[in-house]
Amino acid sequence: NPNWPVIMFSAANLNNPAKGFEHFLECMNNLVQLNTQLQFLVLGRSYTQPIPENLPAKFVGFETKINSILTYYQTSDIYVTTAIEDNLPTTVMEALSCGLPCLGFRVGGIPELIDHDKNGFILNTGDVKALTDLLLNPEIDWSKLGLAARQKAISTYDTQVVLDQIVEEYRNL
Image 1 (cartoon, rainbow, N blue to C red):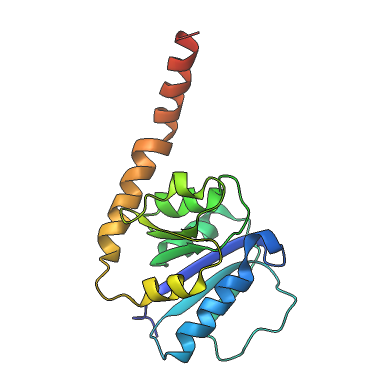
Image 2 (image 1 turned 90 degrees about the vertical axis):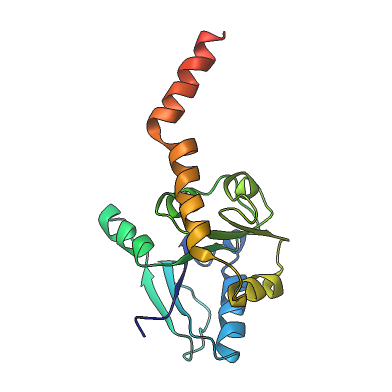
């Protein structure tokens, strides 16, 4: 259904345990069993485990074309990373840049990217119940979080902003 919100997940390799796709899969199953009106978009190399056929999910595989990746972000409403190990995931920066509120676990640099309750939510690692509950919460203003996500990307990760910071560091040497 084109009117249902789209929840996006991506990882270069869905089989990499560090990316935590199993947690996202569990969340999708939870949401489907609750008869939610959500859709899921998954990018990444093929998952080798069986995936329940009742999931309203589109698996698009590994994508390298920038315009296609951008389109996937732009057609999504929320970005989720369930990585249990990561440093500073580019996918979260990309999602923020596209104005997507982001949800992720408290690992690596993810809490530096996602400002809890401002442009998304940070969850305890592996807490699929909390992730499911957030996605079901009707009181969350996802569009407000999305605007804050875009603003953070512009004010923090824009090329000129980063370049100015680097120049300033060199001047302070």
